[in-house]
Image 1 (cartoon, rainbow, N blue to C red):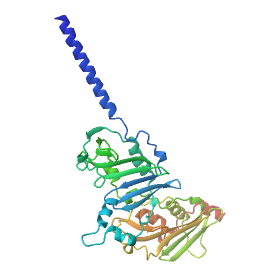
Image 2: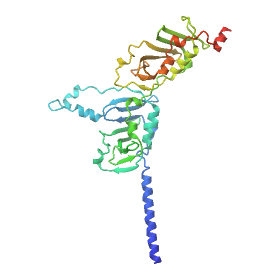
Image 3: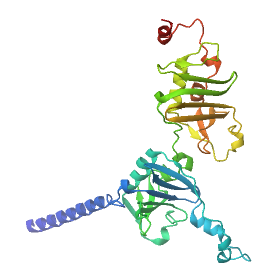
Image 4: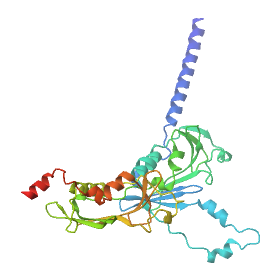
Length: 354
């Protein structure tokens, strides 16, 4: 009996060890990265191909830039296929429009580095769900229905290429993923759909200006009820205007320049908004500041129902949605600038009087 017991005990212990080893191997397998040698610093181009609103990111001059490349190539190709009775693709090849030149804008650096690049670096083969090629459509990891993501270096070498499928849970915190050159499908605990499905404008940098306020020595308010009003700053830091006869608050001019120097929009205007409805093309209101490093122009359009202003920097066709309080702090009129005669003089004014 003792011998039998010892044998049975040995068998149980061996099975437990085997199960522990299998479980450990399974856990270790979940930590295997999709792209173990991926180096975020080596990435120079990122393509995110979707049915609509596809994106192209490129590193240029030390910054990330982004362009909206529209529909996926597969959708475009299907749309260009001739219908019955029409000329073939080869016959119309000579008359086809040249490849579109996309417009690139500054991208939000944080979203690219801490969003896309970190997501690729952290991507692991957590739960293997299928190796059947026929299941790709079911999990939305085929090129047409999925989100195709490619990261390349400066020489065009592919550093990572995968397809994000549908969310695997109701909260969209897990997604199905397939490496582009493999049939295996994995479930990963990352909200990749939420990340890569963001619209084009959500990826753009909303910074309108970034300049040194101390270098500004002139500010012009165009389109105030009292006409155009300009102030200049002398070497001592005092502001002057020889044409107006009312006392003005220099502190508010400094605040206007400071607010404009780091102005950041809340959002961009919807692509469905017509530019003529923004009031920018016929705008009579603008603020122009200038100094030793150049000049900056803020063009102010119509106000929206939700307390924002359509604005432009005049650099490109971007339509920014700026906060009402920021615009009111920058665009100063007499009723805001004029100092009450009963108001106590500032230290700077006292020094001038002495």
